[in-house]
Image 1 (tube, rainbow, N blue to C red):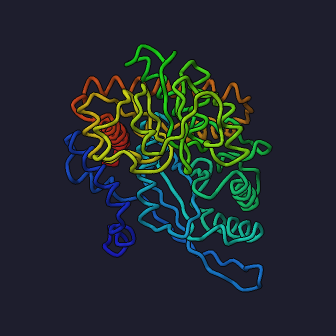
Image 2: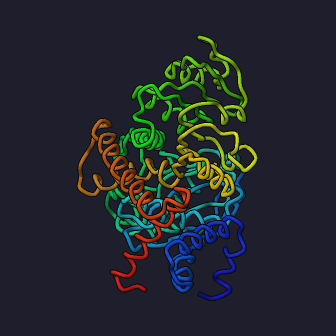
Image 3: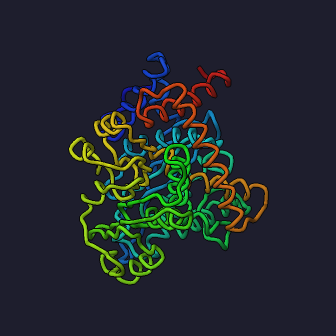
Length: 426
Protein backbone atom coordinates (compact mmCIF):
# COMPACT_ATOMS: atom_id res chain seq x y z
CA UNK A 1 0.00 0.00 0.00
CA UNK A 2 1.72 3.20 -1.14
CA UNK A 3 1.53 6.29 1.04
CA UNK A 4 0.23 8.37 -1.88
CA UNK A 5 -2.68 5.99 -2.52
CA UNK A 6 -3.66 5.61 1.13
CA UNK A 7 -3.49 9.38 1.71
CA UNK A 8 -6.61 9.72 -0.44
CA UNK A 9 -8.65 8.44 2.47
CA UNK A 10 -6.56 7.79 5.61
CA UNK A 11 -7.01 11.24 7.14
CA UNK A 12 -10.78 11.25 6.67
CA UNK A 13 -12.57 11.21 10.08
CA UNK A 14 -15.24 8.77 8.87
CA UNK A 15 -12.56 6.36 7.71
CA UNK A 16 -10.67 6.76 11.00
CA UNK A 17 -13.87 5.87 12.90
CA UNK A 18 -14.27 2.72 10.81
CA UNK A 19 -10.66 1.71 11.49
CA UNK A 20 -11.16 2.31 15.22
CA UNK A 21 -14.14 -0.06 15.22
CA UNK A 22 -12.12 -2.63 13.26
CA UNK A 23 -9.28 -2.43 15.78
CA UNK A 24 -11.71 -2.91 18.69
CA UNK A 25 -13.12 -6.02 17.04
CA UNK A 26 -9.59 -7.28 16.31
CA UNK A 27 -8.65 -6.77 19.96
CA UNK A 28 -11.62 -8.85 21.10
CA UNK A 29 -10.63 -11.59 18.65
CA UNK A 30 -6.92 -11.37 19.44
CA UNK A 31 -6.01 -10.70 15.80
CA UNK A 32 -2.45 -9.55 15.05
CA UNK A 33 -1.74 -6.06 13.68
CA UNK A 34 -0.84 -7.47 10.27
CA UNK A 35 -4.41 -8.75 9.80
CA UNK A 36 -5.77 -5.33 10.76
CA UNK A 37 -3.44 -3.80 8.19
CA UNK A 38 -4.88 -6.07 5.50
CA UNK A 39 -8.48 -5.40 6.49
CA UNK A 40 -8.31 -1.64 6.89
CA UNK A 41 -7.55 -0.98 3.23
CA UNK A 42 -9.91 -1.55 0.28
CA UNK A 43 -8.93 -4.05 -2.39
CA UNK A 44 -9.58 -1.38 -5.00
CA UNK A 45 -10.53 2.32 -5.01
CA UNK A 46 -11.53 3.75 -8.37
CA UNK A 47 -11.89 7.47 -9.13
CA UNK A 48 -13.65 8.61 -12.29
CA UNK A 49 -14.28 11.92 -14.06
CA UNK A 50 -17.86 12.70 -15.14
CA UNK A 51 -18.30 15.61 -17.56
CA UNK A 52 -21.95 16.68 -17.82
CA UNK A 53 -23.35 19.22 -20.26
CA UNK A 54 -25.70 21.38 -18.22
CA UNK A 55 -28.99 22.65 -19.60
CA UNK A 56 -27.37 26.08 -20.10
CA UNK A 57 -24.90 24.51 -22.54
CA UNK A 58 -21.85 24.62 -20.25
CA UNK A 59 -19.87 21.50 -19.30
CA UNK A 60 -19.34 20.79 -15.62
CA UNK A 61 -17.01 18.06 -14.34
CA UNK A 62 -17.89 15.91 -11.32
CA UNK A 63 -15.79 13.31 -9.52
CA UNK A 64 -17.04 9.85 -8.59
CA UNK A 65 -15.61 6.91 -6.67
CA UNK A 66 -16.23 3.22 -6.15
CA UNK A 67 -14.55 1.47 -3.25
CA UNK A 68 -14.34 -2.33 -3.23
CA UNK A 69 -13.31 -3.26 0.26
CA UNK A 70 -13.33 -7.05 0.52
CA UNK A 71 -14.54 -9.91 -1.67
CA UNK A 72 -13.56 -12.94 0.41
CA UNK A 73 -17.21 -13.88 1.03
CA UNK A 74 -18.61 -12.88 -2.36
CA UNK A 75 -19.11 -10.02 -4.84
CA UNK A 76 -18.82 -6.47 -3.53
CA UNK A 77 -22.20 -5.05 -2.50
CA UNK A 78 -23.20 -1.57 -1.44
CA UNK A 79 -25.01 1.56 -2.51
CA UNK A 80 -24.05 4.66 -4.47
CA UNK A 81 -24.75 8.10 -3.03
CA UNK A 82 -24.95 11.55 -4.61
CA UNK A 83 -23.85 14.29 -2.23
CA UNK A 84 -21.81 17.49 -2.41
CA UNK A 85 -19.87 16.27 0.62
CA UNK A 86 -18.77 12.84 -0.64
CA UNK A 87 -15.09 12.10 -0.10
CA UNK A 88 -12.89 9.10 -0.95
CA UNK A 89 -12.47 8.45 2.78
CA UNK A 90 -16.22 8.37 3.37
CA UNK A 91 -16.68 5.94 0.49
CA UNK A 92 -13.90 3.64 1.74
CA UNK A 93 -15.31 3.67 5.28
CA UNK A 94 -18.81 2.89 4.05
CA UNK A 95 -17.49 0.02 1.93
CA UNK A 96 -15.74 -1.39 5.01
CA UNK A 97 -18.97 -1.15 7.02
CA UNK A 98 -20.80 -2.95 4.20
CA UNK A 99 -18.29 -5.81 4.45
CA UNK A 100 -19.17 -6.24 8.12
CA UNK A 101 -22.91 -5.75 7.60
CA UNK A 102 -23.07 -8.35 4.82
CA UNK A 103 -20.91 -10.76 6.81
CA UNK A 104 -23.11 -10.40 9.89
CA UNK A 105 -26.24 -10.78 7.77
CA UNK A 106 -24.94 -14.15 6.62
CA UNK A 107 -25.34 -13.32 2.93
CA UNK A 108 -22.63 -14.15 0.35
CA UNK A 109 -21.40 -10.64 -0.34
CA UNK A 110 -18.35 -8.56 0.34
CA UNK A 111 -18.46 -4.82 0.87
CA UNK A 112 -18.52 -2.01 -1.66
CA UNK A 113 -19.70 1.60 -1.82
CA UNK A 114 -19.84 4.37 -4.36
CA UNK A 115 -20.32 8.11 -4.42
CA UNK A 116 -20.46 11.11 -6.72
CA UNK A 117 -19.60 14.56 -5.41
CA UNK A 118 -22.61 16.50 -6.65
CA UNK A 119 -25.64 18.33 -5.28
CA UNK A 120 -28.41 16.44 -7.08
CA UNK A 121 -30.97 19.10 -6.11
CA UNK A 122 -29.18 21.52 -8.45
CA UNK A 123 -29.53 19.21 -11.48
CA UNK A 124 -32.50 18.76 -13.79
CA UNK A 125 -33.86 15.28 -14.46
CA UNK A 126 -32.06 15.22 -17.81
CA UNK A 127 -28.78 16.28 -16.19
CA UNK A 128 -29.19 13.64 -13.48
CA UNK A 129 -29.71 10.98 -16.13
CA UNK A 130 -26.59 12.06 -18.03
CA UNK A 131 -24.55 12.11 -14.82
CA UNK A 132 -25.82 8.66 -13.79
CA UNK A 133 -25.22 7.03 -17.16
CA UNK A 134 -21.73 8.49 -17.52
CA UNK A 135 -20.74 7.52 -13.98
CA UNK A 136 -21.85 3.93 -14.48
CA UNK A 137 -20.22 3.73 -17.90
CA UNK A 138 -16.99 4.94 -16.28
CA UNK A 139 -17.04 2.15 -13.68
CA UNK A 140 -18.55 -0.49 -15.99
CA UNK A 141 -15.32 -2.53 -16.12
CA UNK A 142 -15.28 -2.68 -12.32
CA UNK A 143 -18.85 -3.90 -11.75
CA UNK A 144 -20.95 -6.85 -12.87
CA UNK A 145 -23.47 -9.42 -11.69
CA UNK A 146 -20.72 -11.59 -10.17
CA UNK A 147 -18.23 -8.80 -9.41
CA UNK A 148 -19.84 -5.76 -7.78
CA UNK A 149 -23.57 -5.08 -7.43
CA UNK A 150 -24.49 -1.46 -6.58
CA UNK A 151 -27.78 -0.26 -5.11
CA UNK A 152 -29.37 3.07 -4.06
CA UNK A 153 -28.12 5.16 -1.17
CA UNK A 154 -28.41 8.86 -0.31
CA UNK A 155 -30.20 10.77 -3.10
CA UNK A 156 -30.29 7.81 -5.48
CA UNK A 157 -33.37 5.68 -6.08
CA UNK A 158 -34.93 3.00 -8.31
CA UNK A 159 -34.94 5.39 -11.29
CA UNK A 160 -31.18 5.85 -10.86
CA UNK A 161 -30.80 2.07 -10.81
CA UNK A 162 -32.86 1.84 -14.03
CA UNK A 163 -30.42 4.20 -15.75
CA UNK A 164 -27.44 2.20 -14.44
CA UNK A 165 -29.00 -1.09 -15.54
CA UNK A 166 -29.80 0.22 -19.01
CA UNK A 167 -26.38 1.82 -19.56
CA UNK A 168 -24.53 -1.31 -18.42
CA UNK A 169 -26.77 -3.56 -20.53
CA UNK A 170 -25.95 -1.48 -23.61
CA UNK A 171 -22.22 -1.80 -22.90
CA UNK A 172 -22.23 -5.59 -22.39
CA UNK A 173 -24.81 -6.31 -25.09
CA UNK A 174 -27.43 -8.14 -23.02
CA UNK A 175 -29.95 -7.41 -20.25
CA UNK A 176 -27.82 -7.71 -17.11
CA UNK A 177 -30.74 -7.95 -14.69
CA UNK A 178 -28.54 -8.58 -11.65
CA UNK A 179 -25.97 -5.79 -12.06
CA UNK A 180 -27.86 -3.51 -9.64
CA UNK A 181 -30.59 -4.08 -7.06
CA UNK A 182 -33.59 -2.06 -5.83
CA UNK A 183 -34.61 -1.60 -9.44
CA UNK A 184 -38.16 -0.62 -10.43
CA UNK A 185 -40.59 -3.54 -10.29
CA UNK A 186 -41.07 -3.40 -14.06
CA UNK A 187 -37.44 -4.37 -14.71
CA UNK A 188 -36.83 -7.06 -12.15
CA UNK A 189 -37.08 -5.17 -8.85
CA UNK A 190 -39.24 -5.94 -5.84
CA UNK A 191 -41.80 -3.64 -4.27
CA UNK A 192 -40.88 -5.33 -0.98
CA UNK A 193 -37.44 -3.67 -1.22
CA UNK A 194 -39.08 -0.36 -0.24
CA UNK A 195 -40.33 -1.73 3.08
CA UNK A 196 -37.50 -4.18 3.75
CA UNK A 197 -35.23 -2.07 5.97
CA UNK A 198 -38.07 -1.10 8.32
CA UNK A 199 -39.38 -4.65 8.21
CA UNK A 200 -35.96 -5.92 9.25
CA UNK A 201 -35.72 -3.44 12.14
CA UNK A 202 -39.11 -4.69 13.33
CA UNK A 203 -38.00 -8.32 12.95
CA UNK A 204 -34.92 -7.69 15.08
CA UNK A 205 -37.08 -6.08 17.77
CA UNK A 206 -39.57 -8.93 17.60
CA UNK A 207 -36.90 -11.61 18.00
CA UNK A 208 -35.21 -9.73 20.85
CA UNK A 209 -38.60 -9.42 22.57
CA UNK A 210 -39.02 -13.19 22.32
CA UNK A 211 -35.62 -13.75 23.93
CA UNK A 212 -35.81 -11.04 26.59
CA UNK A 213 -39.38 -9.84 27.14
CA UNK A 214 -41.45 -12.99 26.69
CA UNK A 215 -42.78 -12.02 23.27
CA UNK A 216 -43.85 -8.94 21.30
CA UNK A 217 -47.59 -9.07 22.09
CA UNK A 218 -48.63 -6.01 24.11
CA UNK A 219 -45.11 -4.57 24.41
CA UNK A 220 -44.85 -0.79 24.19
CA UNK A 221 -42.76 0.85 21.46
CA UNK A 222 -41.51 4.36 20.68
CA UNK A 223 -40.02 5.31 17.31
CA UNK A 224 -37.82 8.34 16.72
CA UNK A 225 -37.86 9.09 13.00
CA UNK A 226 -41.00 8.36 10.98
CA UNK A 227 -39.46 8.19 7.53
CA UNK A 228 -39.32 5.07 5.38
CA UNK A 229 -37.51 2.94 7.99
CA UNK A 230 -39.26 4.11 11.14
CA UNK A 231 -42.77 4.13 9.70
CA UNK A 232 -42.60 0.57 8.36
CA UNK A 233 -40.93 -0.68 11.53
CA UNK A 234 -43.83 0.78 13.51
CA UNK A 235 -46.39 -0.59 11.06
CA UNK A 236 -45.17 -4.18 11.25
CA UNK A 237 -44.65 -4.16 15.02
CA UNK A 238 -48.22 -2.93 15.45
CA UNK A 239 -49.46 -5.69 13.13
CA UNK A 240 -47.64 -8.26 15.28
CA UNK A 241 -49.40 -7.09 18.43
CA UNK A 242 -47.07 -4.46 19.89
CA UNK A 243 -48.49 -1.15 21.12
CA UNK A 244 -46.72 1.77 19.43
CA UNK A 245 -47.25 4.65 21.84
CA UNK A 246 -45.00 7.35 20.35
CA UNK A 247 -43.50 8.39 17.01
CA UNK A 248 -41.69 11.48 15.83
CA UNK A 249 -40.24 13.19 12.77
CA UNK A 250 -38.04 16.25 12.33
CA UNK A 251 -40.88 18.55 13.43
CA UNK A 252 -41.51 16.74 16.72
CA UNK A 253 -43.45 13.79 18.07
CA UNK A 254 -46.75 12.49 19.42
CA UNK A 255 -47.44 10.25 22.41
CA UNK A 256 -50.55 8.32 23.42
CA UNK A 257 -50.16 5.79 26.26
CA UNK A 258 -53.12 3.87 24.84
CA UNK A 259 -51.36 3.35 21.50
CA UNK A 260 -51.39 5.05 18.11
CA UNK A 261 -53.18 3.96 14.94
CA UNK A 262 -50.05 3.64 12.81
CA UNK A 263 -51.89 3.35 9.49
CA UNK A 264 -53.65 6.63 10.29
CA UNK A 265 -50.42 8.29 11.39
CA UNK A 266 -48.77 7.23 8.11
CA UNK A 267 -51.68 8.74 6.19
CA UNK A 268 -51.48 12.03 8.13
CA UNK A 269 -47.70 12.15 7.62
CA UNK A 270 -48.10 11.61 3.87
CA UNK A 271 -50.79 14.31 3.59
CA UNK A 272 -49.35 17.00 5.89
CA UNK A 273 -45.66 16.17 6.21
CA UNK A 274 -45.81 16.05 10.02
CA UNK A 275 -46.94 13.40 12.51
CA UNK A 276 -47.93 16.22 14.88
CA UNK A 277 -51.02 16.80 12.75
CA UNK A 278 -52.41 13.48 14.04
CA UNK A 279 -54.80 14.44 16.84
CA UNK A 280 -56.86 11.34 17.66
CA UNK A 281 -57.21 9.67 21.07
CA UNK A 282 -55.26 11.13 24.01
CA UNK A 283 -52.35 12.37 21.94
CA UNK A 284 -49.79 14.66 23.58
CA UNK A 285 -47.06 16.53 21.72
CA UNK A 286 -43.50 15.61 22.72
CA UNK A 287 -40.00 16.47 21.55
CA UNK A 288 -37.49 14.24 19.77
CA UNK A 289 -35.43 14.27 22.95
CA UNK A 290 -38.35 13.21 25.15
CA UNK A 291 -39.32 10.31 22.89
CA UNK A 292 -35.98 8.62 23.61
CA UNK A 293 -36.58 8.63 27.35
CA UNK A 294 -40.15 7.29 27.51
CA UNK A 295 -40.91 4.35 29.76
CA UNK A 296 -41.38 1.76 26.98
CA UNK A 297 -40.24 -1.78 26.33
CA UNK A 298 -38.71 -1.15 22.90
CA UNK A 299 -37.07 1.99 21.47
CA UNK A 300 -36.36 2.38 17.76
CA UNK A 301 -34.03 5.28 16.88
CA UNK A 302 -34.58 5.60 13.13
CA UNK A 303 -33.71 9.25 12.47
CA UNK A 304 -30.10 10.45 12.55
CA UNK A 305 -26.77 9.48 14.08
CA UNK A 306 -25.54 10.19 17.62
CA UNK A 307 -28.92 10.83 19.28
CA UNK A 308 -28.20 8.51 22.22
CA UNK A 309 -25.15 9.82 24.07
CA UNK A 310 -23.54 9.60 27.48
CA UNK A 311 -25.71 12.58 28.45
CA UNK A 312 -29.14 10.93 27.95
CA UNK A 313 -28.23 7.23 28.15
CA UNK A 314 -28.62 7.15 31.97
CA UNK A 315 -32.26 8.27 31.53
CA UNK A 316 -33.24 5.75 28.87
CA UNK A 317 -35.78 3.24 30.20
CA UNK A 318 -36.37 0.92 27.21
CA UNK A 319 -35.27 -2.67 27.66
CA UNK A 320 -34.50 -3.23 23.97
CA UNK A 321 -33.18 -0.76 21.39
CA UNK A 322 -33.37 -1.76 17.71
CA UNK A 323 -31.31 0.66 15.64
CA UNK A 324 -32.99 1.74 12.42
CA UNK A 325 -30.65 4.67 11.78
CA UNK A 326 -26.94 4.27 11.13
CA UNK A 327 -24.88 5.12 14.21
CA UNK A 328 -27.61 6.51 16.51
CA UNK A 329 -25.73 5.44 19.65
CA UNK A 330 -22.30 6.76 20.63
CA UNK A 331 -19.64 4.34 21.97
CA UNK A 332 -19.85 5.95 25.41
CA UNK A 333 -23.62 5.49 25.50
CA UNK A 334 -23.26 1.90 24.33
CA UNK A 335 -21.27 1.01 27.43
CA UNK A 336 -23.69 2.84 29.77
CA UNK A 337 -26.69 1.04 28.26
CA UNK A 338 -24.91 -2.32 28.43
CA UNK A 339 -24.10 -1.78 32.10
CA UNK A 340 -27.80 -0.98 32.71
CA UNK A 341 -28.80 -4.29 31.13
CA UNK A 342 -30.36 -2.69 28.05
CA UNK A 343 -29.90 -4.74 24.88
CA UNK A 344 -28.92 -2.57 21.91
CA UNK A 345 -29.38 -4.40 18.61
CA UNK A 346 -26.70 -2.64 16.52
CA UNK A 347 -27.40 -1.03 13.18
CA UNK A 348 -25.31 -3.52 11.21
CA UNK A 349 -27.65 -6.26 12.43
CA UNK A 350 -30.99 -4.50 12.88
CA UNK A 351 -31.12 -2.51 9.63
CA UNK A 352 -29.69 -5.20 7.34
CA UNK A 353 -33.14 -5.90 5.87
CA UNK A 354 -32.46 -3.69 2.86
CA UNK A 355 -29.26 -5.41 1.74
CA UNK A 356 -30.75 -8.82 2.52
CA UNK A 357 -33.73 -8.05 0.28
CA UNK A 358 -31.25 -6.87 -2.35
CA UNK A 359 -29.60 -10.29 -2.19
CA UNK A 360 -33.03 -11.93 -2.62
CA UNK A 361 -33.68 -9.74 -5.67
CA UNK A 362 -30.21 -10.37 -7.13
CA UNK A 363 -30.24 -14.13 -6.62
CA UNK A 364 -33.63 -14.46 -8.31
CA UNK A 365 -32.56 -12.16 -11.15
CA UNK A 366 -29.59 -14.45 -11.67
CA UNK A 367 -31.87 -17.51 -11.84
CA UNK A 368 -34.49 -15.81 -14.00
CA UNK A 369 -37.14 -16.09 -11.25
CA UNK A 370 -39.83 -13.62 -10.26
CA UNK A 371 -41.08 -13.32 -6.69
CA UNK A 372 -44.27 -12.02 -5.17
CA UNK A 373 -43.94 -9.52 -2.31
CA UNK A 374 -45.36 -12.10 0.08
CA UNK A 375 -42.71 -14.64 -0.94
CA UNK A 376 -39.93 -12.04 -0.69
CA UNK A 377 -40.95 -10.83 2.78
CA UNK A 378 -41.42 -14.40 3.98
CA UNK A 379 -37.89 -15.22 2.87
CA UNK A 380 -36.53 -12.07 4.50
CA UNK A 381 -38.30 -13.05 7.73
CA UNK A 382 -36.68 -16.50 7.74
CA UNK A 383 -33.20 -15.17 6.95
CA UNK A 384 -33.18 -12.33 9.48
CA UNK A 385 -34.84 -14.38 12.21
CA UNK A 386 -32.27 -17.14 11.84
CA UNK A 387 -29.40 -14.68 11.67
CA UNK A 388 -30.52 -12.64 14.67
CA UNK A 389 -30.69 -15.74 16.82
CA UNK A 390 -27.30 -17.00 15.61
CA UNK A 391 -25.69 -13.66 16.47
CA UNK A 392 -27.56 -13.36 19.78
CA UNK A 393 -26.51 -16.86 20.84
CA UNK A 394 -22.87 -16.28 19.89
CA UNK A 395 -22.87 -12.95 21.75
CA UNK A 396 -24.25 -14.58 24.88
CA UNK A 397 -21.87 -17.52 24.64
CA UNK A 398 -18.59 -15.77 23.78
CA UNK A 399 -18.81 -12.01 24.14
CA UNK A 400 -21.44 -11.19 26.76
CA UNK A 401 -19.10 -8.89 28.70
CA UNK A 402 -19.21 -6.50 25.72
CA UNK A 403 -22.11 -4.48 24.29
CA UNK A 404 -23.85 -6.36 21.50
CA UNK A 405 -22.35 -3.96 18.92
CA UNK A 406 -18.76 -4.89 19.80
CA UNK A 407 -19.72 -8.55 19.70
CA UNK A 408 -21.47 -8.10 16.34
CA UNK A 409 -18.37 -6.50 14.83
CA UNK A 410 -16.20 -9.26 16.24
CA UNK A 411 -18.48 -11.93 14.75
CA UNK A 412 -18.57 -10.19 11.37
CA UNK A 413 -14.81 -9.61 11.21
CA UNK A 414 -14.11 -13.17 12.34
CA UNK A 415 -16.23 -14.57 9.49
CA UNK A 416 -14.34 -12.47 6.92
CA UNK A 417 -10.93 -13.43 8.35
CA UNK A 418 -11.86 -17.11 8.28
CA UNK A 419 -12.97 -16.82 4.64
CA UNK A 420 -9.69 -15.11 3.74
CA UNK A 421 -7.68 -17.83 5.51
CA UNK A 422 -9.62 -20.62 3.81
CA UNK A 423 -8.91 -19.02 0.43
CA UNK A 424 -5.20 -18.67 1.24
CA UNK A 425 -5.20 -14.87 1.15
CA UNK A 426 -3.63 -14.46 4.58
